Amino acid sequence: MVQPLRKKRPDGSLYQRRRNVEEELEQLEELKLQDVLARAREAEQRDEVAVSSEALVYLLRREARKGNLQKPGVDGLISILVNRSEITLKHHISGVFDELQCEEICHEVIDRMIDEITDASDKADYAEVNFNDWLRHNRIDACRKQERKDAGTEQVGDAMADLAEDEADIMPIKKEPISSESPEAAYALTEARDRIAAAIREANLAPTSLKAFLLYYGWDVPIESKDPKEYTLVKHFGKSEKTIRNWLRSAEKVFAKQRGETNEGKREEAREPGLDTTRLLR
Image (cartoon, rainbow, N blue to C red; front, side, top):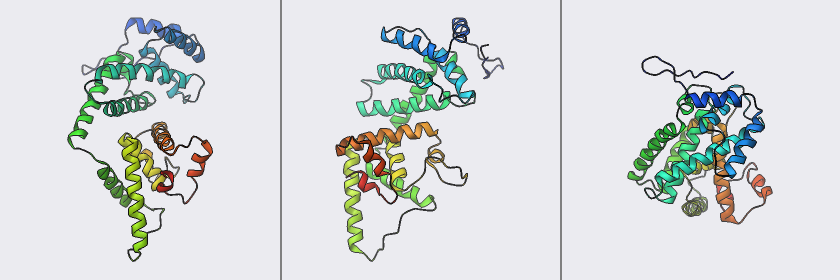
């Protein structure tokens, strides 16, 4: 049975899917998720649509509510929806924003989309009614956010300063303090910061990916924790664990490419205790 939507309009009536979407969902409910994925992929290869975006959202939300996000087929359906969304987003923002800005806007929208679709609340109900219009509203919000950020002329130095403020709020700090009486240590720290800043400029990472990467590797802030009092990246950014890990993977790939490292073993080595951010960027 197709689950009804829960979100209400201002007049108190519930959101309603289009009739063709309801009929489509009734048919898809009879299929296994992997069969739906196979049908969708086959059509995508022919530049056709066999499963609507509204239906993809419904299926993903259904599995999320059941706690089945690791179920075979889920990642494939997410990938199809993300690819469609990126094509639509870039069609509207290319030529208005430069390449880096477009990537940041796409990151913002896609991250929000995944978070809301995999959330148990009714935030994404309208996505099942009119996905393209729902995506349009998220795109407009992300574009406005990008414009505000550009107007503030955010620089790498500002990002590093923000991180310094974050460090003061994170307790305990898992790093030994550097004595002000050691000029050698102070010089080494300055040199390391210069090297990191140069690597960051070259990487051109999205601010969220950069900040998550530095907090995780430089300040040992965990992604999540069973201890409700521990400061985590999930708490800091207000995003899901999956989104945070995507940011970290994105940053890791960029910095690994800079170093010419493709060996997965080196990435595991980089996470050993006591290893600082400067070693990651060497």
